Each structure stands twice: as C-alpha cells, then as structure tokens.
Amino acid sequence: MSALTAPQYSDRSVRAPFGPRKKELAMLVWIPTAVAAWFTIGLLVAVPFLLVGVGRAVEGARGSSVAFRLVVLPAAALLWPVMLRLWIGSARPGGRRA
Image (cartoon, rainbow, N blue to C red):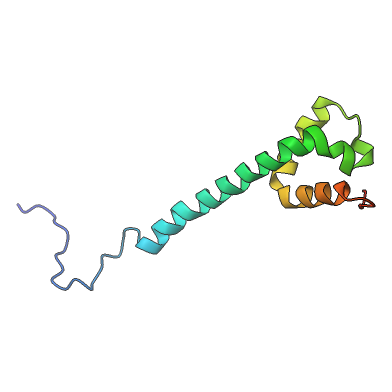
C-alpha cells in the first residue's frame, strides 16, 4: 500500500493551484488596517465634535442630551470628514450653519 503524496514540481515557476498569494495576503492585511485607521481618526474627531462642536455647528442640536450624542457617535465617527468640515465651517466668522 502506498500513501497519497502531493505532486512534486521540478520547475519553481509552476505553483500549486491552492494557497494564498502575496498580493492577496497584502490585501487581507491592508483593508482591515485602513478600516481601523478610518474609525480611529473618526473617533478622535467625533468625540470632541459631539462634546463641543455639535452645539456650534448644528443649531437644532444645541443643548442635546447625552443619549442623543451617544446615538449619533457611530455616524459621526463614520462620516468624520463631513463632521470636521461642518465644525470648521461653523467656527469661522460668518460661517455657514446648518
């Protein structure tokens, strides 16, 4: 009785039809890293925005409750470039208000 063995390739250019390639592995690392970086920056912008800037940028949110700010936190973290632009625009004299 002989045991089953994997085929042996003599040429190094021939690859097995299975197994990840370097580019695919790079994408498996790069995509989650980019998403984590996006949300980290988002939280760094969203938390101060919701504590200080939301009252200045959005008149309807002035004096809002902590519960409202917690509900809005994930969206503010996801859309942090929009929140940052809104906050910076409201800080300028004669700035645009929502």
